[in-house]
Image 1 (spheres, rainbow, N blue to C red):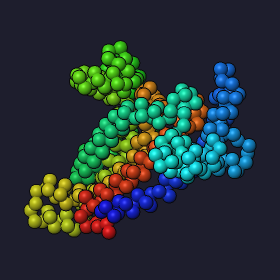
Image 2 (cartoon, rainbow, N blue to C red):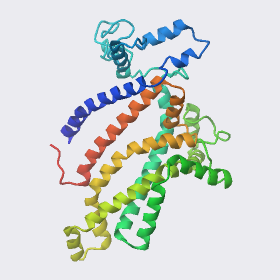
Image 3 (cartoon, rainbow, N blue to C red):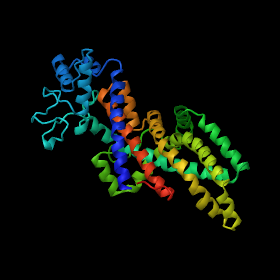
Image 4 (tube, helix red, strand yellow):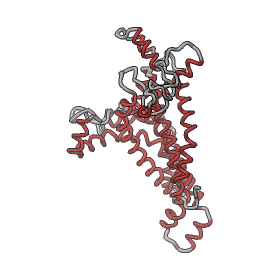
Length: 368
């Protein structure tokens, strides 16, 4: 297993490199370029803009060589301050700083600075990551649990009233746009009925401090229950919006996988031996249906992250999705590339996790 994981990590390196290329080229097509925001600021001199652009090899002249240098500078292979491929210590720039390498670029943990706020991109992402982790983690647990139980129940009760109700639910919610569903939930439960908060992650009037700050975490761990209730109330509507479409689609996928498994000979043999129905369904049929389900769940993590962008924007939820939306509106060059890269790395990681889970789900699978 260890050899397999090491081999998969090595195989993922070209994929990760390709992701960096695609992310960079996408930003190259963005109108205006990274210097556009600076041109609108009267407090920044042209000399300061030029120095900042040179720091990141962004002095564009429609030359393909300059474009390659810009990419390599962002990646951390090229020293844009004049050293070329060598750092200030005369060693290859891609080496870690403690070995005499450079300090600029993704390889060195330097994702650049946000054009809008002037803060380091990695710091901004770290500030928003807890909120997105809470939202996606809660949504993922509920999504997988509800979709799995609904799909298994629909398969076991095939063509029954329960199956028909689950089918209608799936078709209706699967066809709803995420942003539209979020707005409807805000109007009904946030505006008209006033049951749940319609925006944010905490109540700013009663919270001891802004979310994810040191003061907030100090108050949270000192007395966590009120903070948990506050966060839970704010999560209800965005989580419901985020999982509705996923549950609807995946419940049908689980149903299909279970129906195929229930029709196999080993299931009929188990029933003929007089095993309890619950044992037949979960120990024999469900376990053998898990392989395609695990694959589907791992691949749909990407859709969950993409849906979080729309959901966080609709609910003004202070996570990475809203940060990405603000970055698009502000043409925040490095911020967008940083979020795209980290999101892509997360998806690659989840695919590796899915491969490892195959062994736990099906002992017949062996990795050399």
